[in-house]
Length: 221
Image (cartoon, rainbow, N blue to C red; front, side, top):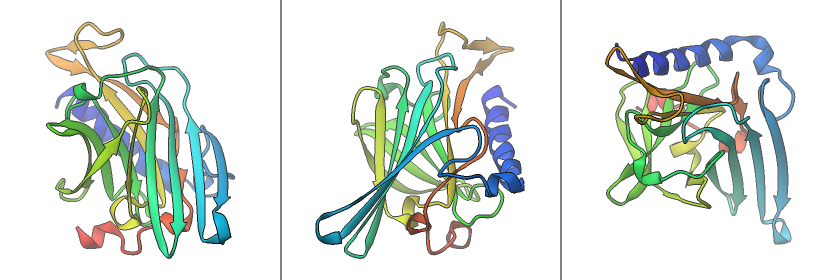
């Protein structure tokens, strides 16, 4: 099995194990242990909207161009509708046109039902029209939705959807990066060596209940 496939399998398996550990389910604050979080709320004019934002930072600790600096989720409730905005930020600027499915991408694993493991993931990859957020069923590996992304700055990418598309109870991000000659990356026995970073370093980040999908994805996909 290629190195990148083994690492990705270990990442998801590790996440499923960590979710089953009771201490992570009772960790205080908006983030699980091993992360640093900042949560803030804003009520719009007339009390018609509420926005909650949680930011989890990550240290400068991984070789390659996709070393994570922070991940953020923002939940906006307005006029009976809920929108979830996801943002990933790196330590240094990167070229979004180089993102691809195998060796260079961002992925957020989403636990939609509160049980061990993730039911879906969203991967950010380049396409002919720019970077897209592909929502993928972990059960079938099918792409069930494609969402557009935005570029807040040269170090960030963001996408937005409703809870049924991209909502979750808990999540973690990871980035994979490989390029010939890059520091810390290369090839081993003919396979690419992937520089991988995750946020948080351990555990999952929790979302408030307005961002939970009403129907668990495992029953729909």
